[in-house]
Length: 212
Image 1 (cartoon, helix red, strand yellow):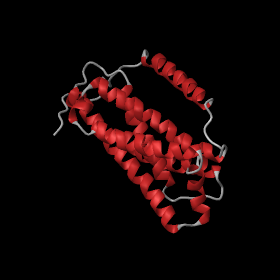
Image 2: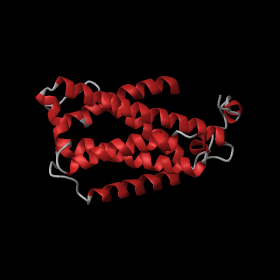
Image 3: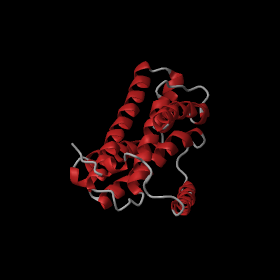
């Protein structure tokens, strides 16, 4: 069921972005917004995988494969983000460009520039070498950074609709609280389940994975 579920997940995440994010500004719309949200979600998924405690059966080849997926979707996110900006700026319709005007004013402009560098440029060069993807600690560090960038990306999408004057330092407390809550839930649930799917008939083949 995992393959059909992934297709279903792609559609639900796309439609959810319309309800949760695009609706925050009822006059703004973007046909590519759903794909943008989906791309960021997939980046965060692989980043979480890079942070989790890996079973001892996993090797550098598995980490290399995970790192390549993370690298690929970082590039995909950047492509979609730039495509959305290019299409909106090219059309130059007031009801569309106002969305970027809010994010290019005041302190939001600094966050916009930081996201472009921190969510794409730095991870691109960081994950490019093969050794970075195979090293457990280096991959975990890159994954943690990308999770932070994903949070800032969502913050950048949501908060200018409510606070056009800039960033509030108190918002960092929400990130710390959510991180602590989710980390505690993971540690609690991980004690009740197996680290690997021991009943999977393709487990032996997966453990012997070798990058081409």
